[in-house]
Picture 1: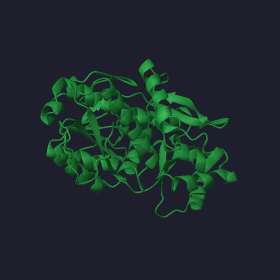
Picture 2 (picture 1 turned 120 degrees about the vertical axis):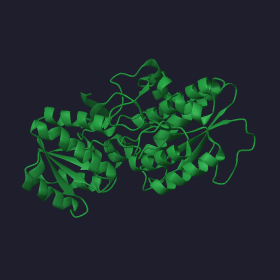
Picture 3 (picture 1 turned 180 degrees about the horizontal axis):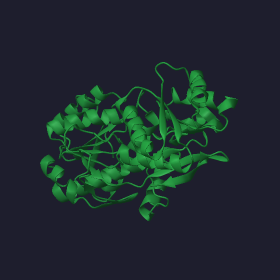
Length: 369
């Protein structure tokens, strides 16, 4: 089972095979995503160990909280490397995963990134890092196609400053412009949520995308727009997936419905996916998000690599192109993809979904890519 090994402690028995897990578990990290990611990682570790471990040796997670802080994540990678982990797993936030990937690459430590989507996860191509989540350009282009298909060509984005949000806005603009779409950027450093409403009316936007943090300012923006009668027909969207989490509904109630977002699940789960879904439900006490499945699949891949190539870091990294693992969302293989600097699963299934206004716990699939 997972070991939350505290900083500075060394393993004593030397018998387990250890994987370092990077997870946002405290604010300003997206804590709910971190909890789901960890639940998936832990469930898969338990199943690996129930099936005999890694050639008779138990698999153990050494968990570190990144708290959405790139410097904290880089320090955790250094520490985990010193502790002797065979590989790194996890992380949800793209800017944090980028810092972790840079350190893993520099140290020669295999890192299977579970959930972060930024295309340029490392500055230069690397052999050490692989990724399960679809690259941002892939998912957000599918989202842009959904917007056009739904009749939206004047799209406002309420954007906070970050590499991730800036990259998302650029992907949308580049994909929409040749098809007659316009992206209007609203700078959330200078606009209060109520001022966003005036800007939307002034610019004639038919859709507003939340390129901003959860819960704030995203929740306040939604409340302001929903209460403005001038904007009764505007569509609010959240490509980064803020409405996926249960906290969204607790904070917004019915105002949080009908806000389309990206998630990385198939229309129908395989028998493995359905079994894992049931186990994750029991573990979390709620329906698992796609992030929990990403966590499970991460350990499934690493366990397969460890069984076939051992715990030598260089041999593990050399194994990325030979991976062929049945995950919860399809067959996982890694390849070199144009514009992506890491070994990439091309691609996990992509959906645009929203919460059903008639049943907030139900997701409606609006578009698949």
